[in-house]
Length: 353
Image (cartoon, rainbow, N blue to C red; front, side, top):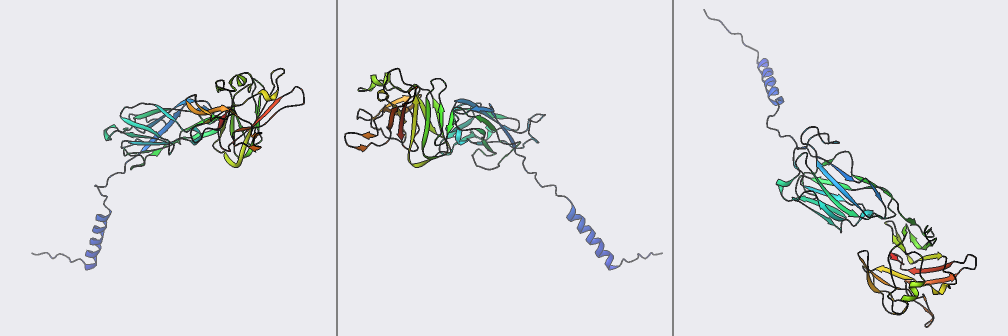
């Protein structure tokens, strides 16, 4: 006895073939690789800074991961090593001097041209693995007029080249410091008084932005062969330091600094002399009161041209001398009498006097 198999319609075979093909297409691939996870955190200590006062700061960079629990602010563990770091130093902190690095297997340096701290692992085997950190300490003197929050923008890469491959994502924001002003930041026409001596300094001229004015220092013109002894007895009560701030924009004409102070009993205003100093970098030696060039002195680790200033008006020639020079000097009529001395200087020059 034979059985006959029923024949399926041709359309049924076509439908079954389409179902099988759809199942094959929808099947997940077992060979696809996961993308690398790359996260890091950065912090800076201390978080507070005082403008105009030298200090030390330490930045720490950590590759997220390691043994549980994860470092604070990390959301997931990285899956690759971190090999390069760049920190953009705020302009108000430049330049910085690197003083220490926590790992001998990393090279860390400061690039004065870009204002960046660059750090790279000395080979792939020294990369920061998940959970590992590196710290570097640097010293700087924040500008006295720098106030508010300043950001040390930090970037990191998986390669051992700054701005290389495999950029990492920073978690929970960039490291910042809060800067409190120290000294006085003046616009044109502003003045400040030294609380110790009562000497008042007024800054005027064709400029925009601010200058930082502080009192105190060890500028000395007592060795001047002609006027050293006179200066030693009759000079400003307090040294004045004037430095253009980051937002300073010099105008076309010189700026003027005017000192007002109480003279010694019986002293005439003409007896007082001004000892002046300007950095040697970017400047030439100015002409002193004695007619010779200013001499070089090292003041607090930096070289300055130093000398006693002449009057701006040259009585012999009837001409005006170039800056820096003393443009005005007199004793007030009102009592108590005050000596007023004004100094003209180049528009953008930082100086001490």
